[in-house]
Length: 183
Image 1 (cartoon, rainbow, N blue to C red):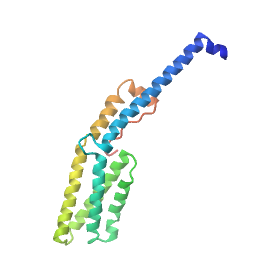
Image 2 (spheres, one colour):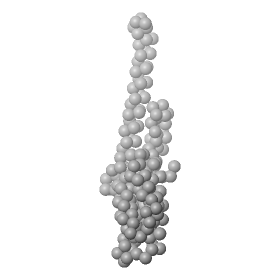
Image 3 (spheres, rainbow, N blue to C red):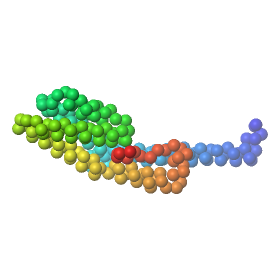
Image 4 (cartoon, rainbow, N blue to C red):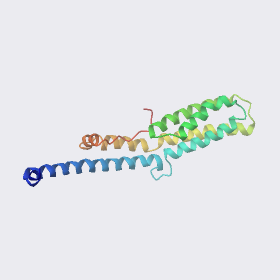
């Protein structure tokens, strides 16, 4: 065995293995670093002061206030679904699951808002309900305009989709950036 490593063939095999390993590890590191930069836009924004994660937290705050007002007029069982969707969004893991939780939260909030508008509300609570609806619509608009999805799609298409990253990325198990949309 010692003779093999001292031979020209042995040296070529070792050198080839080292180069291949270096290329694969370097590719993995570079691609995951680029994906992390894209995903940072989801959590911290692109410098504009807005991010989808911050908007999701705002939705949680708005719906907490909605539950407070709704608790004055609706039975607890009518609010259980909204509370459940809030918990689901508060405990999301991954961008795709965050989108699923967000969709559910928005549906449940809409149902509670619709039910509240059928109730006889005080003038102040009616203003709150309208404000909650407006605030949730504003968060939805901000999320829809957020640059994260374009950045994720660009990474997936132009970086991971281009040669040689398309081949090396699969070999090194680099996954695509998750898009904040229905899967």
